[in-house]
Image (cartoon, rainbow, N blue to C red; front, side):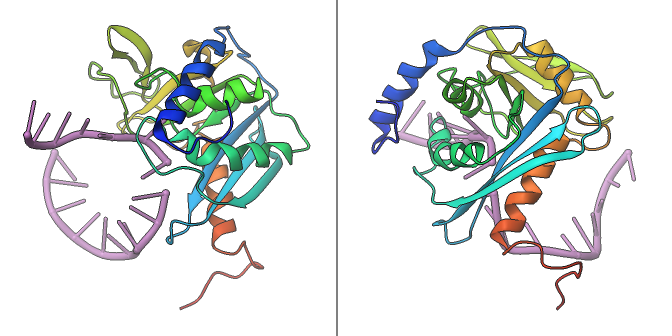
Length: 228
DNA sequence: GCGACAG
DNA sequence: ATCTTGTCGC
């Protein structure tokens, strides 16, 4: 009942079954390792590459990584997005040698129409603390966010706080942070800020994004840059 | 009915 | 997601 769905109705049933398993806990505010997860799609829409990169939480040095090629497991439907990428991401997670303490996903967690976005899904399936950092909103409304890095505003949907709109760089478009599993919003925002010393997106997300894009392109070859 | 809609 | 460098505005 929790495998890959064939229809939207099955997907909704799986979300309903897994949602009660989300655990509300403080989470590790000072983890030793953090992992970034991301997926890149081939233009043919038939192939994808999923990457997970584990970083030292303090130095941001790469400790481990895994990239797996696969196929989208479900069509793209807002709200059911996780079903596309979860199977391949879980495979990549199995290949890691270093078990990360926190998963940082490219997408939302509770900031989802049924409170079960990708970050919740991966958290419940792996049992690991997780949260999501999205570049654009899926649900919710918020008050204008202060222009300085660190400023945040509550992301509210259906009368409840489902996440935070967080400014990670001065005067740069904010990101959308939401809890996935076994971590709270304050901890998630703190980790997000610790991972954005220079860019809008967390170093974890950037590292995973690079890894899966490189893999799709055929992998880095030597030190030379592709020529005309 | 019309738009919005993570990646 | 992906197509994509320089350009417009403050």
